[in-house]
Length: 284
Image (tube, rainbow, N blue to C red; front, side):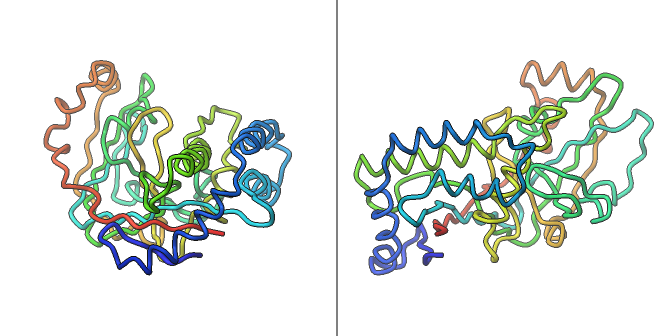
């Protein structure tokens, strides 16, 4: 793992020490070979692969010689930021507070970032993104939970959003290919019966993206342009449950189709500025 450098700056020596391995990796990276490897990656039979085999397949895409670099941003979510979560529940469901948090380990199922038995709390920054991922089926109601961050969350996030290394245009394009591949893995749509595809993001998080100092993963939406934050169950109490609202599926669907979430949840949409610090890191 390389030293971190922050947007605020720690002097050119820190940035130089951090950027040299990345610049060398991008210099040696063959973009055409990378594209072919990405194409071959999607030809794998993931249903028949073990988690280790999936992890090795990801590594083989990024490999240059005997090494690879995984660009990761370390994002800090400030105390006071609001996050939201949506669940589908029966019309007569009466929630308790325990229904608003990650399930205990013995009831934690297989999901996008966590394997069975690993509790994670999945949240979004905005209601539009949350409802895009979790449309409410007819006959159900939407249980909308709003949380306030009460202790800052350090999140790892795949890829870099901008040029942190004074890269050339060619290097930025190559870095963009790597970043897009990683984000495509996170935003892969998984339909019923295709839950084996979760092995991909689970391997990516467990082996490459999950840094020890981070308590959550910030990743792109699958069906919307927004972002999600998945908090490890052991750290979910860094959030405070602010409110719970039950919404009828017909109303939710009508307003969602019209993209009028702010009409229904105006008071819940008064979010603070979400991110105040970004740090970039790479994993070798």
